[in-house]
Image (cartoon, helix red, strand yellow):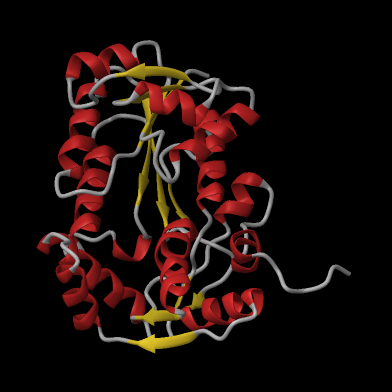
Length: 290
């Protein structure tokens, strides 16, 4: 199987490449910074340097490839980039495996980035290209690892915009494992798969888990969605992106991403990683070994 991975150096891409290596594949990756990709991925991928928005570069990178993993950074023009990829590959017959957002938000009137995903999904489905769409819930590495835990370390507080609602967070490594199997098999062609963790967890559960592992008290501070929006703007976030997160947190607070799917287990033959396992890795466990 010849596989091209786009978005190989972000939160999910390196796990896709690592899982492909476990399956005996050496994918090609198209990246802007070849040196960074080589340092991050080691010898597990063939590194092709260039700008994916340049048709000549994309054509050269995709030459001879059977399947393309489509992932690009969150941004105001994300859909333009992805639609350009689909358009350029349309006559090649290459299968496209697209990583999308949380299933409950992929609607024509959803939050900004999710509207973009919705548009790309519709075009992909109508393009005639073989495809698989992976709709992933929020990543533990981002929400917990990059947002919640740094706040806890610096302030001892958790800012909670979701109230009691839960969110079935998924470990990015599980997304990579599902993607690798979908990229190397045709069992799921033409399907849209929802990816979640094993259960929905609330911010207070995350706080309790962190407290039990650090041995320190954690204060959970409930805030409104408007307060979150104002804070994002104060920190310099662009208005469109702050609006996007305001809407996303609103959906989460309404319980729209509490659903749980069996996709990780069905595709990889193992259960998705738990919140407890992620916190053990991130913070260590205070429990004595049995």
